[in-house]
Image (cartoon, rainbow, N blue to C red):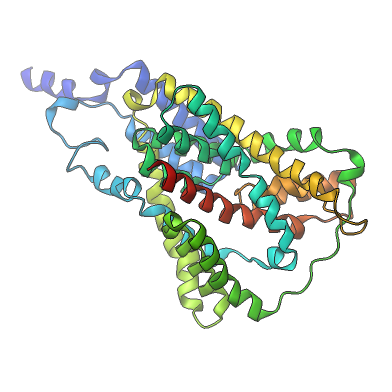
Length: 378
């Protein structure tokens, strides 16, 4: 009976709390959104299962080395790649190897829309500071507005490691909810006439431009924000592997095997870091709420700046303001959404290639913004 009693004391049933139950429900909800609704399944399914992994109750003072925050545990070793900012640059390497910057190169002014959308980061930073968060915490929260999960994880691991779990969950959740969050903002801030604007066809981009862009782009952005070197360097290096034409094997590894492996490890460990005792706090609720506000502001910033640019552009060269919503870093979901909304009003007005310009610019912009915040706040 003593042996049976000891066994039961170690089981999850004897150590479960309401916090564990709430977090398990949240994990199941994330997996439901990924599987049943196809909302960013490659992200939400690993994160959702990671939430389950991190919230199985056990006897914490028994020295079992099970929890992600316990030195010596397997999960703690895997989590090392998150807290030291190793996984996000590797994901950026894969993103670079998958990204075609032709749409941006064919119409360089679209980079301004990617920059304008970053206003969500800085306004949220000010709002979080006003609510009483420290400057470092506010900077980590603000980066959610960039809608870039790896960048959010990278910056929060440097500025506010204790908020990393909720910031990562917020960033990836709002990336997954792009089809729900963005359309109302896009339609509210544009007129039917503006949504019907047709843009000039994108020009053909020569191979030499595609090869030179990652080199020149890296030098320019890295000089602006040297603290973002791990992200910018990997992003542009991955793109050079793709565009050079002589390193296809390396590019294929970066955009397939490597990024898939790192995504699994990142999703599981970030999810597992959301232990009930660390996650269910008023701070978490505030961060999650501000993340939604940041995403809305970023979307509005891109749309409104496109309308502002049109004041100075001649007829025939105007930008469809819907494309401004793609200035966030949710690639390619935001660009696809712009295409979908545009086709609602004109079945022959295809905006996808135009929207990809600010969309990929948003990836660069969020990395630069993270570098600026890191330099100022760390």
